[in-house]
Length: 452
Image (cartoon, rainbow, N blue to C red; front, side):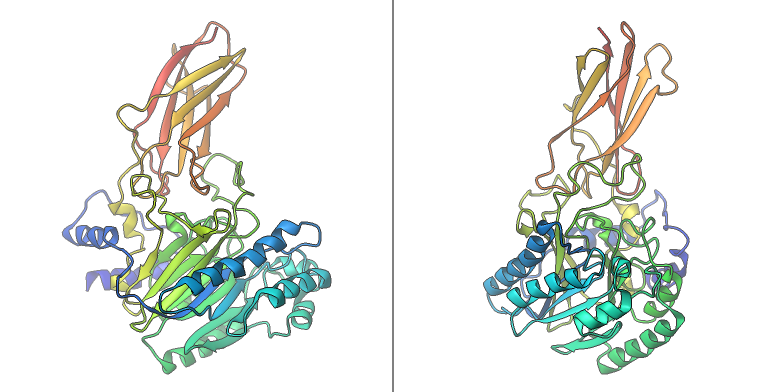
């Protein structure tokens, strides 16, 4: 009962801040942690419905790689579906906005050509608009080229899919749309209150999934108020390009939210250094495959188009072949949700192996620091690299933060960072501190060196 109450209470609270939790773990927390750690693909899960969802395809007339990746999405999703032992249908492909880079007629023509060349008759293609489509033809061009209404409620294989396009600002939905959404959700719930209801809008709901603190819809509060009345809502959003293999890409607080990544590049939250588009960010392309079984259990599998395979779990103390899968066993009961803010309380800090060491290679007034990845049973996220004058070690003379590059597969085993403008003859201490996805720091490793 307490966990159900907390699930209800946290809906409005998380619009203003993340639930921080405490270091004290109760018996209930331990039960939650055990359930979270025990989540595996259920042996008896047999899909009766399947769709692929992506966003931020950014089809362009000048960059063919985006067109190639979009076509590959269909090919990869069909290959997976064809290879399934029992259920071989791909029932729908969804795009959650920024389907085109500027929304020009030429870009829509490319998008539609790729769909026509790759889609099968049994697959429905369902889209909404993002903000980028307003750089060109806007609402009028979208309707003209896609032959669709701006907002839609589609039923596929008995499952409801509801999508909202943004208003001309490209960043929010209107009050009129909230009234429409409430009515359509009620229809879906009245049809079958035990089934998941799949919804999508382009912008994240603020302070929920990864990167939603930086990129979000200005209608977040209104959407929350509507969606939170139906715990079976599974909501998808894009806009941020946040990497979908980050554990915080799924968030539950009264209902379920997920980011859809991007086929163009990934972008990070503004919490590691000052670089949200680090090296390698464009060598990424991601989407989700979502399945439901006859018991209305939902299984979500993040897919990596670059490796053309499902993502592996980002925890680097897991079996390296273990697939990243998110499961919702009961969409109607928030007390059973596993991907809530409670995860922060039950996941430990990242740590370095006992034999982990920092090495330094000098070149004139520069020093390149190398170190192994820390271990994290959630996801190695980032590092704070601090340089101290050993004679005055209270405050770093130089400091920066870098990502672990968890969004790449395989994740590099060793990372490097170069400090410049060092003083000859001076002895420095370099300290490397691992950072979790929650922004918490583990124990650092360090070494001293003298500039030659």
